[in-house]
Length: 77
Image (cartoon, rainbow, N blue to C red; front, top):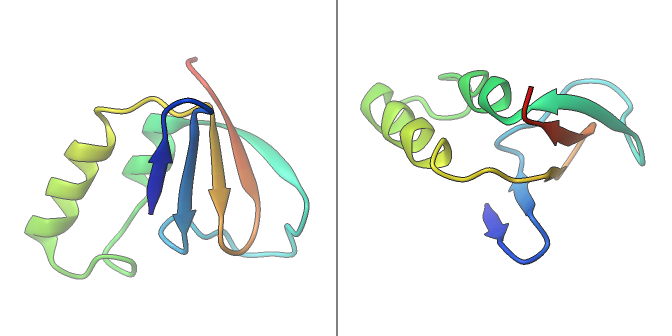
């Protein structure tokens, strides 16, 4: 994963993967919701999952580019 501050794009690889055929599709979402949706299926160690979520909540990307599935255009509300 990588956050590019100048463009506001968070490249999540498969961390925020969504199911379904989302190739080339963008859905609206909230960054906080995306972060809290990361579960033990992605980060099995509970302590590391919580630490990662806390770290991710310190940034505010405008867009989440995923490795598979739907990309997310983040809103603040």
